Image (cartoon, rainbow, N blue to C red):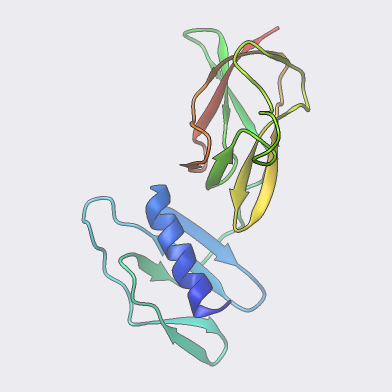
Length: 163
């Protein structure tokens, strides 16, 4: 991973509002943490990206060199007992899109009936567009996120009334 890619990742995480992102490849491990209490967090002076290679990473977020497995990329329905609605949550951090591409129609609208396996939206993470499928059948009651908005892991996306 190039220093420019690391800097772009740090900027993306800072803008998204996420508090922590972990990334692991065969060559390196990186954890980017933002400090919600302070506008600028401390950062180590160098970041090890591969064995023997050290790059400077002066950004206003904390970086550590440990990681865990990334979250699964499946939607996460949660039942809202107060309204008997199910909340579909984001399985990852990224950018929420209601359309497969700018010139296409949206996947779903409020009032649409969906069945298990229907694509509801896409979440773009690191230039990969991940389709988020419904794990429940029902009617879309509310879309909780604006198109092209950043989302965090477990961020509520849709309210679905089960059928």
